[in-house]
Image 1: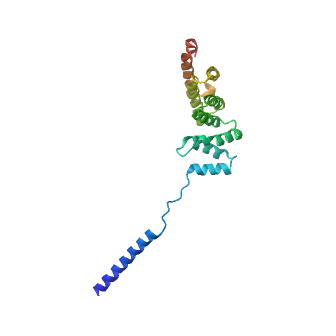
Image 2: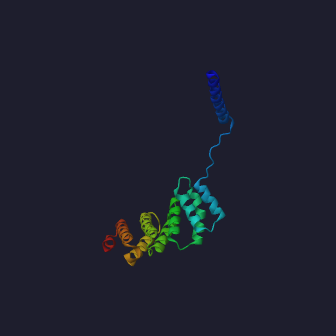
Image 3: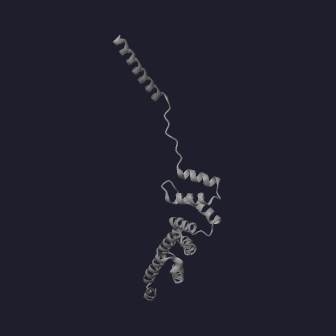
Length: 193
């Protein structure tokens, strides 16, 4: 009797192993289908080109994520510029995109626009945009033909005072103007700041 039980148990184990092997070998193995977030954003932008949030998220993803393609950021940025032309973050993103593609004069114009739009805001994002725009403009001042214009625009913003910029941005702007004055060989302008 024990041998019959043992044979039955071995038969069940053998049947289980055989069925497991058949299931593993016989069924088609598929990798799980995954859609990248950038592809979801691209599809949503195509379906909803007037959605400001989607266009902004796609532009940022194209510019700053590993799966993004900075060349593809132009379409959502153009759409954003037409939908919300008075948003500092849009001009800042356009400036970053233009900078990445080597269009420094256009980037400088966008950063100046971002600075102008953001300087009266108290939102943390706009404060960061002001400081980033100042830093970018300072770095461009030695490379673009419009360097005197950039310096002049930064000086105008500085003279408007810290009440419009916030203390951190005001300090950063003053520091940038001193550096630019020294680089231009204008010691008197540097001291006057």
